[in-house]
Image (cartoon, rainbow, N blue to C red; front, side, top):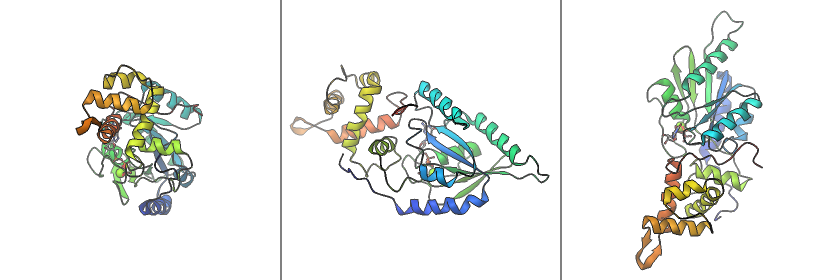
Length: 282
Ligand SMILES: Nc1nc2c(ncn2[C@@H]2O[C@H](COP(=O)(O)OP(=O)(O)OP(=O)(O)O)[C@@H](O)[C@H]2O)c(=O)[nH]1
Ligand SMILES: [Mg+2]
C-alpha cells in the first residue's frame, strides 16, 4: 500500500467530536448507523465511548448492498450482544417500520413514570458516508438534510422533527484519529467512508480484488465475463481491462480507468450483494 502509516484526521472531525459531546445533554438516545457490509469496521470506538451512557439503537444501513445471508448473521450477532439491530435501506425506507417500532418503544420507556411526556431526542451518529442524512430524510419524508456519495457531506448539526414526538439530530460523520489496523482502513476505503485521495486507488482496487477472489469469486467472473479468478490480483485487473477495452495507446493497460470502474461498480452494488466481514472473522 502506498501509505503504510495512515495517520490523518481532518480538523472538522475533531470539531464534530466536540459537537457530539456538547449535545449529549440534549439527547436521551443515540442511533448508531453502521454499514451493513462492514459492521465491525464501521463501528467507531470514539463514537462508542461518546454515547456509552445513552440508550442505543443500532442500524445496519445499506443492507440492500450487503449479502442477505450475512445481514441475517449480523442481526443475530448484535441481538446476542443485547443490542436492537435494525436492517435498513435508507433510500427506499425498507426497515423503517421496524425502526419506528424500536424508537416508539424507547420513547415509552423514557416516559414510563412521567406525567409530562418528553419527546425522544435521538442523535444520529456514524462514520462518514454510511447514510445518516439519507436516513433522516427518509424518516422525515422530505429532503431536510444534504446527502452525497462521498464522505464529509454534512458539516454542522441539524435537528429534524418527526411525527409522534420524535426528534433527530443529524451530525457529520467521524472517523478515528489513527488507524491501527490496515484491514479496517482498507474496508473503510472500499465502501467510500475514507476519501479516495487518502489511499492510492489502484492499490485499493488490487486489495478489493483480493477480497473478492477469496469470498465472492463467482461475482467477479459473472460481472466481468472473465474465465477464472486464478492468479494474482493484477492479472485479474488486466483480464478486466481486456474485456472492457481499457487499453491505451501502445497497448498499455489503463489501470487507472479499471480501478475507477471496479471501485464504482463495487460501491454501486453492480457486482452483486457483497459483505466484507462476517461475525467470527479473526
Ligand atoms: N444503496 C444504498 N445507498 C445508500 C443508502 N443510504 C445512503 N446511501 C447512499 O450513500 C451515500 C451517502 O449518504 P449520506 O446520507 O450523505 O451519508 P452520511 O452518513 O450523511 O454522510 P456524511 O454526512 O458525509 O457523514 C449517498 O450517495 C446515498 O445515496 C442505502 O441504504 N442503500
Ligand atoms: Mg450527512
